[in-house]
Image (tube, rainbow, N blue to C red; front, side, top):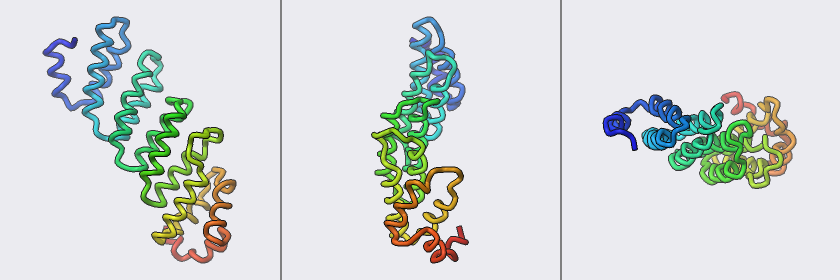
Length: 208
């Protein structure tokens, strides 16, 4: 159990960076007593962080640590992040870290969070962000299909006069494989080719 004078400092400080570094030091110890301290300090630190992205970055820091003993504690931060996420974009940020093979590497959990993001999305831009993230994973069958998420983006854009957002996104491929899965969906859903749509919305697109 943490000494009372030390516990008082831990509970009253707002310096979460200090607490996380202190927790990492304790968790790296070969003494069980210090490991227990580290777990307690980490819990206090994470409870003080109310921002989902900061929690995800903390989880990523643990997940990518050279010290294998503290890597599992990334899960603690990720769990809290999923609970305080404010929008679909926060959930995508979390899922990207969970699923990435060089970070946490849990595609099952990542897939669940991507589905949460789809359910939370409220606009075309958020659907497009989700589609872009999941398109990089070719064989993860528990993930939403990027083409289906893209269709939701189109439906949202058509309902809110944001088709230029979709067209601009397609043209700004930046080395992605969007033409393989996005263009067929676009042409079927909109009833025109991307070039025809560009001509129709070219004045509005110029504003983006």
